[in-house]
Length: 144
Image (cartoon, rainbow, N blue to C red; front, side, top):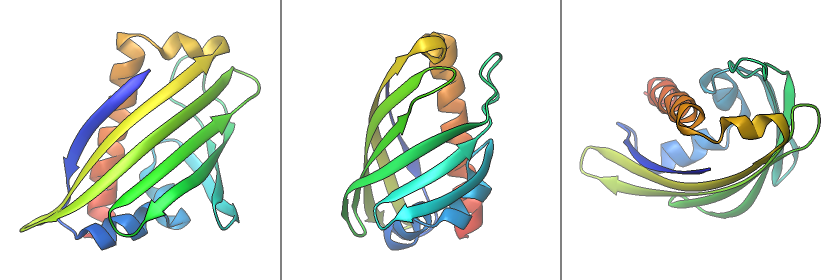
């Protein structure tokens, strides 16, 4: 599954960058997130309940902060194996300050296997993009 897009924030790239790496902010902004915490300086674990039929969870997902160049670039790797299938995803996130806030652009590629691979279709992609849109709106409100 390939995803890409943009979101315009009212906050600066530094504020957005720091918020993306803050577990408390992430928990309040990610739809279906029950908890998130740092395992070490470059790994977080999120516990999610997905709103997809047959895939409700809960699921533990490990997020590796593979590369970061504050406040303009993050590369995140997401891994999950277990009941419901596996996910191996990489996302590159770019932030650029503009006159009225930061522009975030992302490119992501996710390899799905097992039952969760059923989400790799137009409906699943639409649900994922909808969840991302909700996340970005929540993040914008939380930062502001």
